[in-house]
Image (cartoon, rainbow, N blue to C red; front, side, top):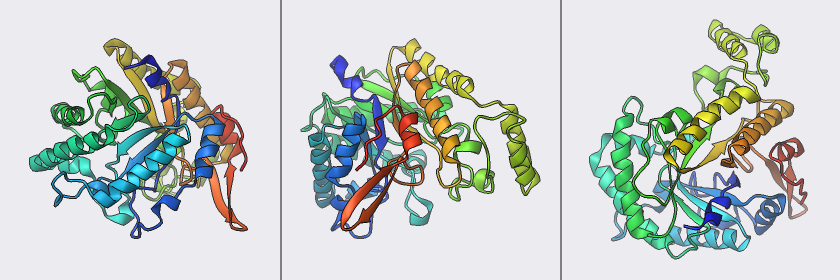
Length: 361
């Protein structure tokens, strides 16, 4: 494995809602993103994209190799376009499903159904074998997004090892990406012992604190559903306005606790240092391939400051990163058609927060 390989994962973005969650009509799936989008990303300074794929889009249990041939061709076409644009790609089997789509969370199936583990390992051996044709310096295989295993973290490592060995049989040269439990957060990572395979990078996700990053998101649970006007950074003084606007005792207690925790750059860096120390202790490479804040309910200034602080904290430990996401609820840009042409409007404060060039298209 070359030393250059890790450098491809320095600055990334997630391309959500392309192959995850699948559309009902796949006839125009390649039109979800244009080559103009990919040129924008390259010129802005991104080195890679993370490509979330719903397992249900690719898995065909009736096929001898468990792969849906037609949908696999669409993945190939996307990879070809991204690589031609000069972007490395993390191919991510993305377990978390959109609630309104009512599709399965595959981590839960692994926890409850041993037969599904056998199916999943066989799938990964076949899928990795297919992906082995791509440049191992620039295509990375992420085995499972956000494994849960709540209260059962010790069950994940042996399963993960089986899945990794299957993928390795299929793709002997490619770097695998794996994480710990608890939605791939830092605490889950700290519970994980590295696998014996030396060609693995480890990843974690960072959305701390949820009180700020997910405030008002109607899919993120009752704890944050009714939160709004939560500032960043936090202090007992800064949250006074949000406290006065809160509608319930529970929300006031949540906001008060957030204020007393004094979330700022130093607090974020201290949390990320735990992951960095784990990686140093085990002599492994580490990336953060999801972090972001919900733009629908957070001020542009607050979101940009939080993103900047997370990015700077990650870079202070030389940890590569990928923001969630390009153009959705956590968007970096606004995309719209005007006069038959695609117009990409980046959020300037967010681009600056990521330390990237303000490219306009």
